[in-house]
Image (cartoon, rainbow, N blue to C red; front, side, top):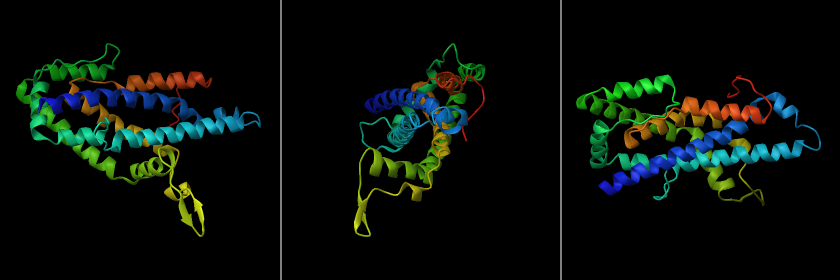
Length: 242
């Protein structure tokens, strides 16, 4: 059982790191999708094609990575699907539950005040109260994950990964072979940002109950977005996610 707990902790560590890399890439993509001035500055005959190549490459790379870190079932992949399956083992969960009651929660010195306050409150709880925090967090995780993995959005992402980006699938239609028709998948630019927002609390809570560590996504994402705005020459606090 210790081997499973060690695996869950190792996979959660790399899940968090990979998810942060995904958020950073999206921070550079988001202005391309939603900031009109950015697109206009690259709409000339010489630059327009290059802008579109970068935009679509980044967009579909991020779509593929969301599908990969959430739904991949290869046992060696640190996906949320695999981690949640491991957490469903009651013996492993009880080991993590006991570790949670004894751990000194770690948080960054740069963390948001609300995150530091949360860690402080948990540190001051007794064993019974910490058990309750662990159980409630796990219950919330199960609910959040059930909602996320069954929605049409993630199914569309997986279809794109399986048939267009990670693999190529041709289908014979009316006597000729073609790729899947993306227009029929009802995919919108804003679906990617929505999926990332829904994954954040799941990744955060997995990190909390498995690694006994808090993580301040608000601070991290704010830094990434600032760098993305500066890259495109738009140092503004305006939000672009739609």
